[in-house]
Length: 116
Image 1 (tube, rainbow, N blue to C red):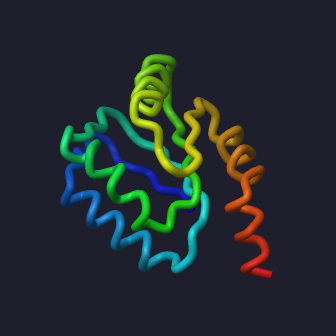
Image 2 (cartoon, rainbow, N blue to C red):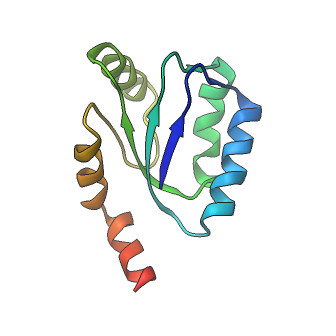
Image 3 (cartoon, rainbow, N blue to C red):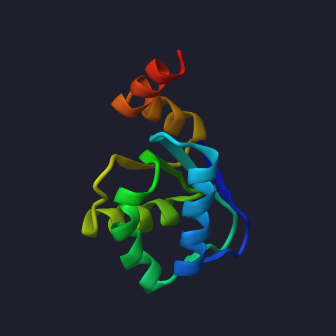
């Protein structure tokens, strides 16, 4: 599943709830997600805290975050080291490397079994 956030999106708790609803409408099973974003995305402090609580209630089996530059990568790596997610998550600068990593995970292999 590929999720792209447009430029200047502000992620707050209401946005998270809408995203969660959309994810469940699109899929009824846990699967890997790859996230990309435009310029100047912001995440409120409340949304950061809420993200951890939501982990068990979204169909995201693993996440690959694609960032545009070294500064974004450092910030994302730092945030996820301080507040590690329950499910696999890795930050990449290259989209194809993110896809390859997701394909190596159990949640991807399980998805192949469900589809076939």
